[in-house]
Length: 286
View 1: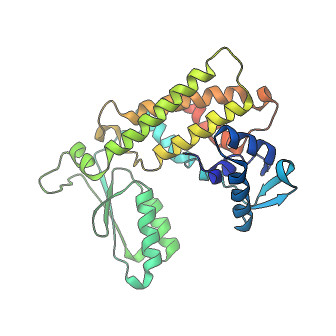
View 2 (view 1 turned 90 degrees about the horizontal axis):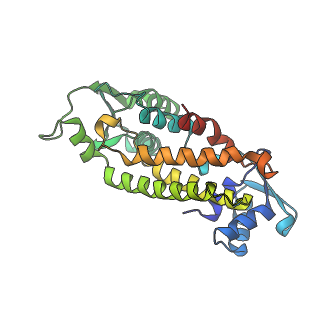
View 3 (view 1 turned 90 degrees about the vertical axis):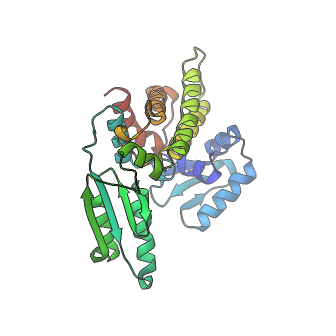
């Protein structure tokens, strides 16, 4: 689902501005009211995320930072997912374990390190002990160093992981990660991408507003599917895997959108398009 805040973030153009008239038009196409947009703009300005020049639909918003990431996963993460889909990142059978024991006096650092580990796709085995199939230790160590708790972090690897009586890697993955829930998110992404491809493949011309709506809905659904995905190697996933199929359809849909480009519509594209352009073209045509 696209919120008004997410919409404003996604509409930031290459020069860091948001055209209010275009914003209200796209919001209307998504079923949002002008009042919702006005209140959202007011909050974003009050938070210092945007400055505001002009009034109503003639206004221009200017971002104080590149916040495109609010609606899109980090490009390196997306690239790695598509490398897995192409069979370019096979699993070597190694499990990567991360453990820490940080006292209550450093609770903020402890919570931040835990969030970093979970965001990188690791699963909790028990208190303070996490596991993943991907070599994320350098990223975790960098975060721990920045937080000043590197001395409390333990990193190790094993090829013999057992949980109770279970040691089969695919069985362990199914027990540690919510694969059914992740697959359902990807099924929704696949359905949306398929619908977008149908609209983009129609012989009738598609207005720029309609193209942007397709792009924003696709980006939001893509983020919703990717963010909780630990990007487990294909060897650990049910086959065929919903994520592979959905990402393929999403790449095709993005490619169709990108082919139309700003020169085809006469306007500058949001940063969102630049963020996806290279990685999606690679995925669709490796």
